[in-house]
Image 1 (spheres, rainbow, N blue to C red):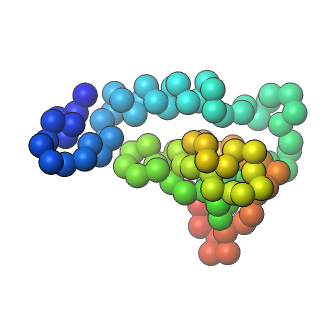
Image 2 (cartoon, rainbow, N blue to C red):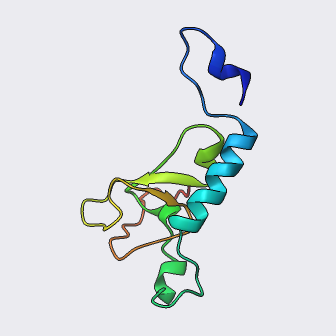
Image 3 (cartoon, one colour):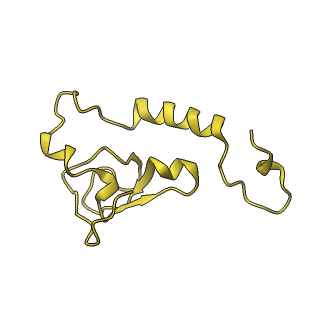
Length: 99
């Protein structure tokens, strides 16, 4: 792990390539739906989590692809989500930003 874990009095930032790659691999298997998966709706491709007003990016390197859903009507509320997934409770960001 990165040396920043051992800095006394400072919170670990999570910016460790090996750790982040392992998280991405694990989370991709269990958290993310593939576009070719049965039940994946075509409309979700254009309404990805990263463009939803209720998706909040994680901090650090993991935040480049992963965030937390805060959508009260989403089945994923309170769960880590891949920015390119989606759900029926998608709400477009008013500023048009992504990620």
